Length: 259
Image 1 (cartoon, helix red, strand yellow):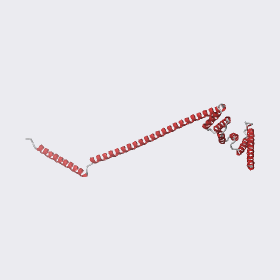
Image 2 (cartoon, one colour; image 1 turned 120 degrees about the vertical axis):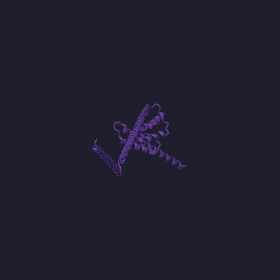
Image 3 (tube, one colour; image 1 turned 180 degrees about the vertical axis):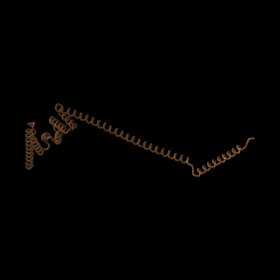
Image 4 (cartoon, rainbow, N blue to C red; image 1 turned 120 degrees about the horizontal axis):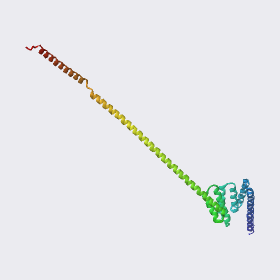
């Protein structure tokens, strides 16, 4: 019984000691964070790094410390580590916390982190979650409206780009069709020219063949020529003989006297 009491006392001492250490790291982190934001014109990232380190040490002592998680997210955001900051804000927003104002801050800053990485849909949902926990937060309302307007403009711009791209694609398609039609027409004209040349060539060949046939028809064989010559000679001989006979008869008539 005594040993159990002593052991319980030891555990309480350890827990108290860890809690003290946890709060110590958180206080150190808060001091470094405040030093870094004193002069907003000069961002001292070194101090934010030290604050981050202290908050992580506090979470090593107590992983479920909501304040340490939230402050760690803030220190990461200030270092422009927006992806890491978003994870921590999401963790803070997902933890059980009866303080709705704190939850609203976590979701508000989560929306800001998403905005920095142009995740507009996620940012809008984060702002809506913040307003569910704190409906009267004017800054969150403003950021929500700004994110929605930016998303709308991006969608309109994307729609216009898509329409322009569709028009370019259609114009290119029509141009390709025209080129294909022109090529087909050119090919048809070439075929027609070729056919015409072939027809002309064939006509020339046919005309030449007809001329050759006609020349062949007009030409006579050697034998026919000889026969024709003989016939002409015979006709001429007959004519000469007739002429001679007529001369003889005429001569006889002139020698006779008319008594």
